[in-house]
Length: 570
Ligand SMILES: CC(=O)SCCNC(=O)CCNC(=O)[C@H](O)C(C)(C)COP(=O)(O)OP(=O)(O)OC[C@H]1O[C@@H](n2cnc3c(N)ncnc32)[C@H](O)[C@@H]1OP(=O)(O)O
Ligand SMILES: CC(C)C(=O)C(=O)O
Ligand SMILES: [Mg+2]
Image 1 (spheres, rainbow, N blue to C red):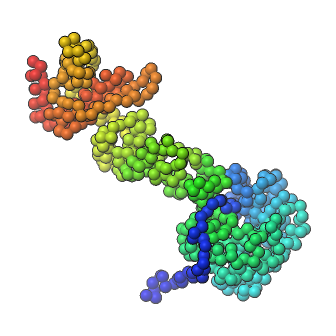
Image 2: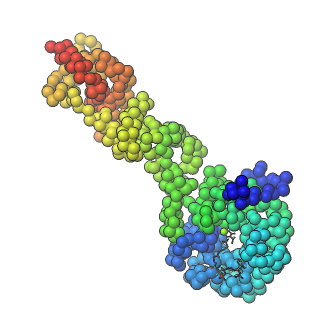
């Protein structure tokens, strides 16, 4: 078994924290958000952003409502340095926004970082070094004491350089990079040592940021690690405890949420989860998850499509169509039972203050998304979906049994084509099936009069074409439909009848649905008529049903029916 790939890996070490409290906590308020799109997101791009693209993204982040934005790694490149200078020189940082920059714990880089911030009103300097055993051994060649020395030297230099630039209101952040792979007691030791140098106070708190630089365990383990730090950090009261999850195991969102339950006050991440490898935690998902719990995230995604298009432009990376909340397909249901439930949910929603539409965790309208794409019809769809589209786009509210009947027609068409059906396609199919059926009987005109012999009865005189040949029939019944059925004399009876108006006002259009049974109709069959005159709509509906029924008969049965039809009237 030694050749098996699994033999190359070690299980992650659980945290000894039997009295953990986070599992019974709930999130009741948003964290402090820090967008690192312009730093961690940027360093993960095939082509890092130029100043123009960075500016566009910065403005977007401000517009969304971020109050802390990591804008650059100024010592990394002239572009990043110039970008920070541009923001400061052109007074582009709103008064309520604090920019943050990242630097390694190296003297030259820290000096250059402070230089980039000259003249800033407020800034957070974020210093990091990796702390896990592999990094200590392999990257730095340092023992624990040496690693602490690296961090504290950098922390002291920050104090000194900040004092030299007193025009800026400074805050400091320290990250034990690779925290999740670091022994907890060592993570605490190095953070405490840095905080001892910074001496944070209640009105000048330091930020301790715990990164899942690489996500190496299940989110509950991360939560345990965060709770352990939350309970053991020496300066906890004067510390903003931040987390910085990455998404290597696909659990970045869960990790960030559990970490907040475990004591984290702040979350660093990127829009739509851009960032190194599988990305940083997705701040949009985190924020909108809060929305669905009745908590305002303090960020504005009321036009999420605009945010998505700008981010795609700046990052030059597409957003997946199934990405939570924003993906093109996430508010779309193709499958029949989902569509049915959504349709019913929408109908019930009107009277409801709380959002309770099945399969839609959030109201798309809250994100500036429309209801148009919610239901789309393909071979996985049922009657609910096509009924929803025809009602939404054509005001056609079908009786339930007609939905079932028509969905079989839709299904056959779809099985043959294998393609999605738009509302327009459905309408064309519906028209062909129910409205444009003029053979063998075509309606031309009718006249109604009262029956003087039988009070309340009506006499109908109806002009038709039978296979293009003009005929006139007269019938007598207790209403126009009954009279018309008598006139046709095909031994038909009405199974169900419904009429509705499709439009309002003086030019209103009515739709009549009639379900007929009879000698020539085994079971029952629908017919539909649309006309501004409701009687005409009903007669059209009768002929629609009759013609559809005749079309289903074989030639012998048709011949028999027609000879009977004409013989009776001879
Ligand atoms: C998890 C994260 O996202 S961390 C942020 C990572 N982001 C980036 O690296 C993007 C920007 N970085 C850069 O442009 C470059 O790395 C620079 C300009 C910062 C530094 O470049 P260079 O000086 O050429 O160093 P390089 O990138 O090769 O870094 C390796 C050196 O830095 C040291 N180093 C790495 N991280 C740190 C740290 N946090 N603190 C102190 N030293 C560090 C390494 O030990 C190594 O030292 P050595 O050359 O003595 O062996
Ligand atoms: C610099 C740190 C915070 C980082 O990006 C990481 O560890 O992922
Ligand atoms: Mg990172």
